[in-house]
Length: 213
Image (cartoon, rainbow, N blue to C red; front, side):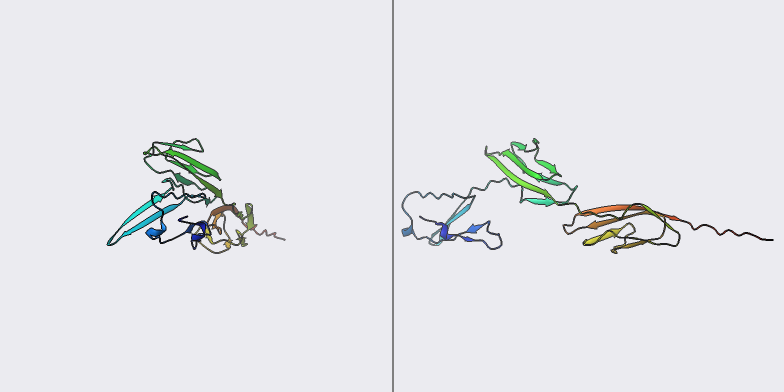
């Protein structure tokens, strides 16, 4: 056996997904004739460097297709991601039924595409799209206060970023005048959420004077 499973080690930083082997072989270690290397698990790249004195020959093989939708991904609620199967294919067929190079995705699920390449190869790839759980943000119901009072608006805590309608970035906002107030927050996944509150400030009643004779 030219290459054995024990020749491979995990590539650092890949979480065990990738493994590699580098092995130097002399001519005496190789059987004569053609050599067949088979991989029974997953896809692989193989490079062979043949040193010929002052020069060398390099051969490369890969059974990875040229079609790659990317790694599985999570997106924010109500956002859109574009999946691209690459240009210049003879035909496209997506799991959604689309036959275009790209599709726009807003819902979570498993998406696949099959393409016929210009060299008549049939390629396919799959990607899992997940949607982060929406972050609740609430300023409360529309309300009214009396003149001279203050309504403190609080969207909640744990946000990476807070932006109020006038550009303020404080965790809370003190409202004293009639108007529409809104807040936009970014959660831990950098997903935006927004809420609006309408505030009415009622004037104080006027004083009544009674004259006695």
